[in-house]
Amino acid sequence: MTIDDARLLRWRMHAQLAPAEPATVADAAGRAAGIQAQDAPAARLGLRARGVRTPRQVQAALETGEVVSSWLMRGTLHLVPADDLPWLLGIFGARNVAAGAGRRRQLGLTEEVCAQALAVIPEVLRAPLGRAELIAALIGRGVAVDPAGQAPHHLVGYAAARGLIRRGAEVAPREPGYVLLDGPPPEPAGDTERAALAARYLAAFGPAGPADFAAWSGLPLAVCRRALADAGLPEVAPGLFADPGTEPPPGPVHVRLLGAYDNYLLGYRDRAAMLDPAFAGRINAGGGVIHPALVADGRVLGRWRVERARGAATLAVEPFGPLARSVRGAVAAETEAVGRFLGEELELRVAGP
Image (cartoon, rainbow, N blue to C red; front, side):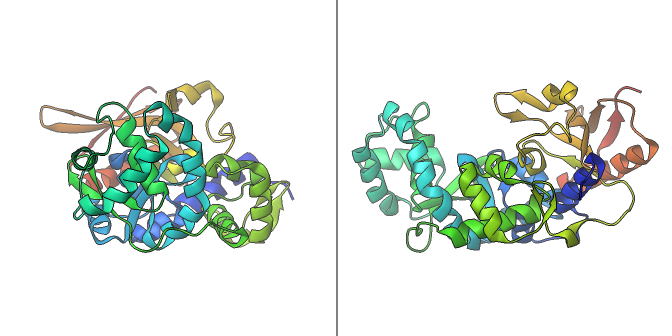
């Protein structure tokens, strides 16, 4: 069995961004195998594209602990259902601690300093604190950490990877709070947990192969091959695995306005099929920046942004070429949906032909 690019991309987009009934935040994050969350507004837009109705819904889910954020796949921050965090830390926690050891030493975060911080954090983190407040409290207890530069970021990441803290709701605009993580430290993961991760990945990103799973997760390719085999899903095309029942039926064009750093653009080793290499630099701007994208039936057709001036807001789309009439109509509907989510009326402007 072979799959042409159009069929493959439509299947993948449906897996990651299927038209959904209004979802709980935990449901949306779980179906997506975690939401990239280093940029909070972008993470909220990622959840919108997967059925979440309002930003307040996201804040409430963080406040109640329905969802949590921590450094997981590829050592990057992801928002996941709270029930998933312990076993995900079992897979990624020790790996991320080891990966950051050299940089911590460069920043003066010796093993002794880190151990002291782990001992003191439960004493000072009685209520949610922003990172600067947490670091100030640690310094006040004699922990030798430079509050400037990157040391605070690496120290809280270390404590999160060790299973001591997690990110929670914002304590101020664009200022996430940190809270203690309930329960014992995570147990090291085994084959069962890695197979569960592989199954979750394929449900969200399939059809995909071991190299895609490795690129998304940051795990070694040999580990990914074994985990995919253990997950037990069939090979639907050479080197690609998925549940055959998840392929979408024929239907109208499926369009989404995806926020920055969206999962769909970060789930595969090679983006050439979904994003023409001639336009790749307009989405992946370098330095790890991934711009918001217009996607139709799995293909990236342009980028977009919201412009605000004189009390008005415009959703400006920069297509890479002429858009079909069906796509334009769907973009207009998506613009209205983004406006409802943000709580403001957006005027659509499409540049070019």
